[in-house]
Image (cartoon, rainbow, N blue to C red):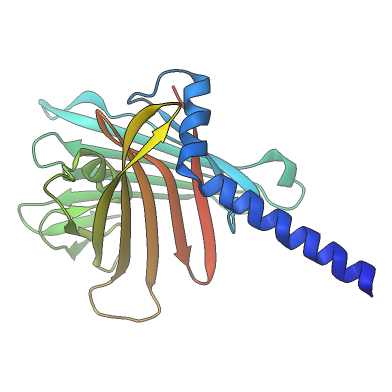
Length: 252
């Protein structure tokens, strides 16, 4: 019994150490420095369950200028996939694309593809008409609120925010049926890594349905590195009783 308790104690202490190490902004920045210069680019993340167990990887691509209906737009792309080590039990991936107005930074089209082994792929395309306040999914129109965002365009807006002026913010989000609101607060902090001072932003946000349904909400915390833009180096999402961490490990 004593041996079992000792083993459990070692596992708990190790888990706490790993979780703290994965969530330490200084350690994350040091890792990025070792890989090269810190600058805007394609962001590569390692995804952890409960901050400890690595379960996947994700890439959030830098915005790229394209043309749509004769106008310049930003194309955002992100992909997430489970680690191959879990392929015997589960294999899945998500591909997201957002086409965003360059002036208001509002989405025009949002595309989502979910791939899960053994199941039919899920494809969804959302077309936003921000002026009319509607979005269309497979020909079905739904009302949206002003400046409604999708997940990728919301992140782009956060990356572009001036946190010298912004302490609190709100966003409308909808990619399916219901309108959600994201409410966030932020505080800046200076940290020293390898004798250089870096400015980080500690942001917290809550996402919940506009109809105040208590069962559909998530809490998000982020550490943003202010380096030409706000680079998310750590993202934590708590939803449905599950904590998922995404730690930035490389910028390409």
